[in-house]
Length: 455
Image (cartoon, rainbow, N blue to C red; front, side):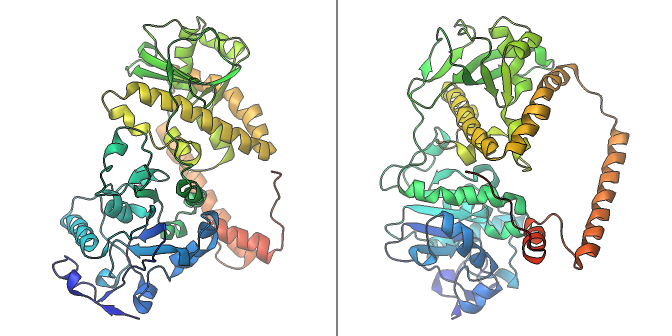
């Protein structure tokens, strides 16, 4: 049932640009409130949020992995009218007058209609607009998968100075991708499912956990497998970069993460044959060699060097492979990468990096065990190439830009040709970039069974 604009809309920049208001559905006793951007045409017609394509998508695997149903949640949007008859809104991060007008409208709508119901424990903010309205931070790409205090609570802001953990009674916000975005960017589907799968653990107080107490100082020896990370002063010549500190982790228990100031501590004894896990080997191996009194060549002779970026790329064709992204999927602690900019948080940042690397590696090893073919690619092709990547990082590689542009054009032409061939073969304009369309053709139309994976 359509609801006309009410008294709360008076003074909003969008007051006269949307005829109907779609109110939130707040359910007494619901511990979760799901918050989106603004109503679509179906939401405006029915007068209810999330009844269109996005709502139907949410009712599938996302509610399933979150162990929720719609009837157990409050649900709404940060803008409660369909502005100018469109689903599109200005950029919440932009500097144009329309962008500032949008931010004013989000603030007005929050004051008029956006109260979080009593008993709410967690808000799920889908996309930049919802993130801005609930946290004051408009970057869902930066904070996707992480937990932030609700805007206006006493803890708001503390998440910027430590890996934040909500106290009992505090309302937190899980920032994630707006499900409508997945229709055009399906690569984000699996990370988004990871986000929603955290909801039961958040409600149970099992995620995020506080970082363990880090032990600062050298140890006489180190286990056979450990993560290793460095911080250094960048230099024009990478070989001249000054090492500030390094950190090590061989577990998640108290006292098992070691952070040492390079200038003040003797490095631990590392037995040859150890597996050294780095988040980016070209940045760490030279410092590891210096700390252990070896050349780079000797490091590769004496140790197995694992690289999380390369290992993840062997498993998943996602556009991001950095530790901030990987930590959002598998780390047991809340976001910490922003702490590198916080004065006085240097040691905490370094220890969390080592801990995050360790936990991400545990998860990636589990995935490689489930996928033997990807493990074979990583261990026989990718990992043996790491020494060459390290050498290239410091030697420099001249790029023939004209040839690169030519090859990219050839690849683009091949992509168009493959798309046309696929459309001709199946009889409809299939989009090969869409896993849903390709899966529909292979599994439903052609009748092939999806490959099973041992768990």
